Length: 112
Length: 113
Image (cartoon, rainbow over all chains, first blue to last red; front, side, top):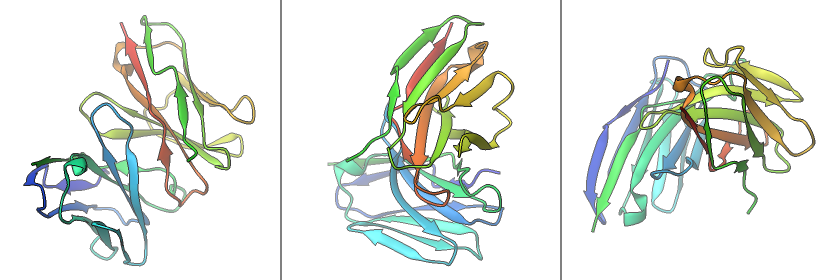
């Protein structure tokens, strides 16, 4: 079952913050976040493993609450280059560590 | 920085024809994957491959599909008899380990007419 992302779309002005949520009805081993620009490949942002960790680099960070089976991506002081579709992807573990199930995506648009 | 590469970037084929999509994963990676993305939709897992065999495949990956690592660098996806609904962007990805991040290639846009 695919993870569910919210919101479906976000419109920001440069410098504003955004949060994208990802939840799953299945137990998760890991959550991966990707950004995809139109016509391009998904670009890896970060991976969070079972253990409830939080990660970040510069202005993009993420958290993973394995008990709630939820992850959130935090974008602070957004830049024009942040525009794109953000996908969370989950791996269930067991024999499926490498099989990523992608959410439906959140379209982020940053205006000047 | 090492990258996953894919060829061709765009393939047009007629329904019923066979196509082979090619990928060169990052050189020290051991796990290889194929995903597809129908225009405007989410990315869907097709198959994972490790140690010269399929680790896992999705319900999409039926008998029309096969994967191969014919040499030490290439990883291929073959679709034996293409259908209109196979039209999509096909992404190859690779990772160093099964629980590590997957790096995606630029994709091959397959158009079946």
